Amino acid sequence: MLFKERFEQEIVPQLMKELRLRNVMEVPQVEKVVINMGVAEKDNPKILEGAVKNLTKIAGQHPVVTKAKKSISDFHLTAGDPIGCKVTLRCDRAYEFLNKLFNVVLPGIRDFRGMSSSAFDGRGNYTLGVAEQMIFPEISYNEVVKTQGMDITIVTTAKNDQEGYALLKGLGLPFKD
Image (cartoon, rainbow, N blue to C red; front, top):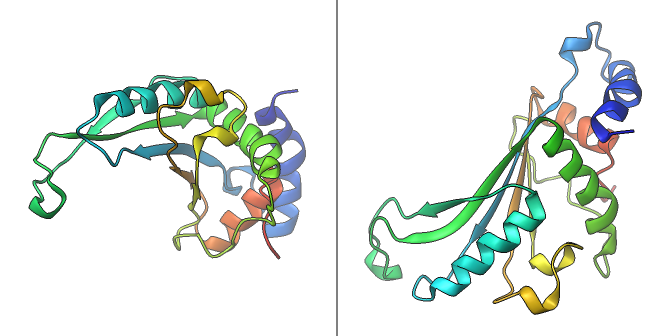
């Protein structure tokens, strides 16, 4: 059974009861998942290529290379320099990525005690940071040019943090309680 089907059949009725909702359309859902990898060294193009390859394997679709919007002299940046890559997952791909993240990747981290429940933005969206890309099973040590972290933002249709928390808890995100 796909994770999205399990969500619709098991988790939606549970959320309706927990949040005291009358209509199925009121139940918060995952709108999209955005994975962002910033590249610190803009002088070495191999690091950016490696980040794009790794993010392609992790997400299952090709990322977009992000470029600097402004020139910042303190960081030796000029507008238009490639500074990272990002990918946006929607629908089934977002739910399958979250299934892999919650049930395989996060529990596999050494000394993992759960995610902080204070990383919500006030509108039900959640952002978490990952220290290195090698915690994903698709990435082998030999393929990594440079270990890099990434930001994963889960955008939901929740109206507030309590609904977002209930949604992610129902989906299986391990929180520190």
